[in-house]
Structure formats: C-alpha cells, structure tokens
Length: 395
Image 1: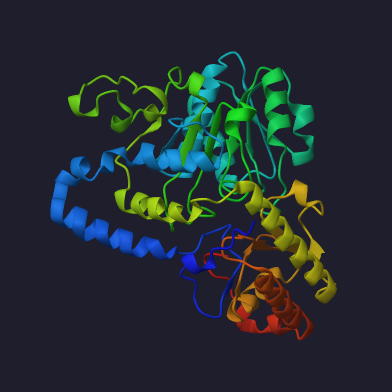
Image 2: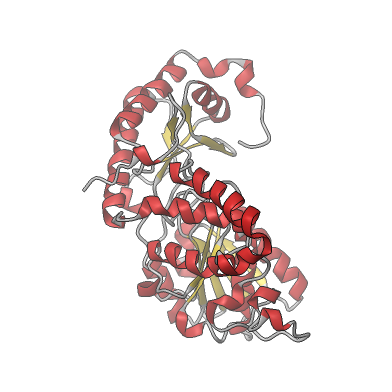
C-alpha cells in the first residue's frame, strides 16, 4: 500500500529533499496551526492558555502520539527538553539501578553527544565508572556481567547501519544490564516495538523523520513497570508530583511524568503535534517496504552512474535504516554542488555523503533524478568549483 503523501508537505519547487534524516520538511498543516496558537491561544488567552488550551498536558499527549510510532504503550513516553538532556536522564537512572556495576558499554557508531553526556556524567559522579566504546559489530561479545548499562543508537547516523534491537536487548538483560536505545534515526523511519523488546529506556528527537521543525523537543520512554521506581537526576519542578504546591522538597510525579524537567516549549510542541497529523493511517510496515525500495533503487542508480563512489552503508537493506551513505574523498564539495543543483543531502566527516529516504514525500522519480544529477556532477567534475569547497558552519 502506498504511503506517499507529498501533497501534505510544503516542499520548495524544483528541490529533491534527501535530508529528512537530519531535518524533516514542513508539513503544510503546521504553519496555520502555530499561527492559530500564537494569536488565538497565547495572544487571546495569555496565561490562561496553560489551563484552557491544554499547554500543560502537551508533553504527555504528544508523547503518546510519538509512542504510537515506536511501539510504546500509552503513558510511557513524555516530551520535552533536548535529546542530550534525555540521554543524561536515562543514563543516570540506569546507573542508579545497577549500583554495584561501573561499566557503560557503547559503540563507535553512537552519536557523539550521547558519548559526551556519558563522559560528563562519569566525571561528575566520580564513582569510578568507565565508558567502554567498541566497534558496532563487537557489541554483543562485550555485554558481560560487568556492564551496568548498554547505551546505543539504533541506527548509525553516519552509515545507516542498524542494530538488532531485540537481540541486543535480550543479551543485555541476560547479563543483568540496563538497556538504553537512542531512536533519533529510527522514530518515523523504521518499525520499532519497544513494548516487545523490553528495553528499560529509549530516547529520541522529533525534528528528523517526525518533521517537528528545528529545535523540536525530544522524548523519553521508560518501561512501564519501572516508571515509578526511577529516580530522576534532573529533578525539575514539572517532574514534581504537585508542581504548583511549590514544596521545598522534591517528590517525583508518578510514572514517566517524573522525567519532565522544565517548562514545555509550547510553540515547538504545537508544531510537532500538528506535524504528526501526516502520520495518521500510515502503516510502519508499508513505510519500511517503500523506504527499502527507494534506497535500493538509489544504490543501483548511483552504482551505474558513479563508479568512483563506495557504499558506506550495509548492502543488505535489512541491516540499515532509512538512509544511504557513500564514501568519497571530495564528499563535502560534491554535496555542496548537489545542493546548488537542487538535490539536498548532507555531509558527515571525514568523507561521508548521506541521503535520507522518506517515502511520505520521496518517490521513485525523485530517486532517479537525484542519481542523474549526482552522476553529472561527478562526470563533469562540477564539484571542483572553489565555491563548493568553502566549509560552512553546518555541513
């Protein structure tokens, strides 16, 4: 069944957008909804909006909508803050759950922020914890009874390599470790079933495949049977059992609500809430099948036109997420040339060109046209223009 909904997105004319794995495009329904919130709620109701417009309930309500896309039961996901904060919350809680263990296991495919947050937490705890980073293919053999928490990004942000969530979670539990999944490149891209896999925690952002807009809030999931036991390291006032009692001592709210920290970003969450409307009726299995078909076609087209590019992603589509990456020495300049010619992907150091495939608004014609343009840029060395070699702040 087709999942193509290009008519629901406000895409610039003449642009093939293959960067939804970094920032999703604007759904047409968002601008009007945000404008209505600004004038009809904030403007008209002022502070009354917290009550009459349901702003205070947004983190839980929108969390359930995101949870539906990642196989989480209602009431187990809450929105707010940034992904870095959610990583910190999940990891600190996981270490408290295994006080006798001192090892955090991650891999070299993890997003650097996750590793930075782990390093910072280790320094400030000063309890002798150690962060062990191994190659992705070595994760399973390093899950031992010394590990307190296994912290992994499900889909590698550079190559699209995808971990076996069920198998790794099972191995972590067999070793007595806590499992934390970063779903930044999974939510809205590949089928995820948190309830079935049994992971204790999952986190993710909402500005990529979920199209929540730049700076859209992150989410955190806690397995429901553990939610009332977790002790938040960041004990913010909105994670309090009774925020407006203004108690001087912290009492955690029941369930995942205790992972709320500060005031919710109402404008951003309103945009995300509206953006999630494009997912109504989408079957993740159908989306995954369409994503694989598009990425396989792109790989074949690029192989035929661009023999100088080396595939950085797994050849087997079952082992990668909804993106395809290629190694190329002049990858940065080539990507800039592509963008100038209407195909937007992105670059990740040292030499990776990334292309994301979102079947909601990308079709086979887009894929073929993008490969044709890439082939022409390489054949005619259009990337060798000095203008394309000047590094910008965001790559």
